[in-house]
Length: 243
Image (cartoon, rainbow, N blue to C red; front, side, top):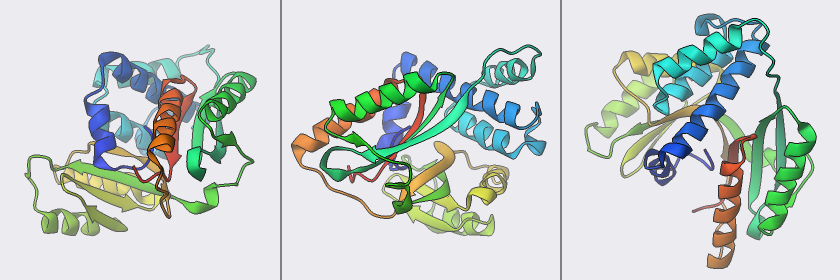
């Protein structure tokens, strides 16, 4: 769940071990619980747009329907003692890479200390809010796998634009579709109705420009991203490293 939606990042997720898949599902479930709470207990995605966005993300991550159902029942259940808050941290990685860390926590002090440690351990540093977010755009990002060459670029592009997408990018083995955040659910639903499925689907912080790193700094950056990924409180990590 780090970086932007370049296909090699998605491939890592697809080939991850069961333990990593389970960890990813746990993080998505946490997002669902918060979305239901902030939506006044509503578990109907038709009436809770944030929840609809997270369910689309869950399905793209191949989270089983039974898991989604259990999570929603748990979130709506009376006396649910879990209480999380969303916190965003910003800072710099090795070589000046801009990094945004989105966390969900029930202990702000624990999470802040851990995030700072991850930055410091890998030659980066935690900065003030707003220090790097100005160089990112918040967008809906839908990735369609075309590893087997099943889709024609022109067809997918026209379908995406007809469904209300803002932009379209073709890579060697995938197509990336960009939307305004408020249009994400409508575009995802319209493309699903056209029988498309997604390798990744979520609201992302997309960098306006990218930074190249030396081999040494690249190793440090990889390590830092792994530390964030393994941190239970960290939901997403966005950066402008040109991998």
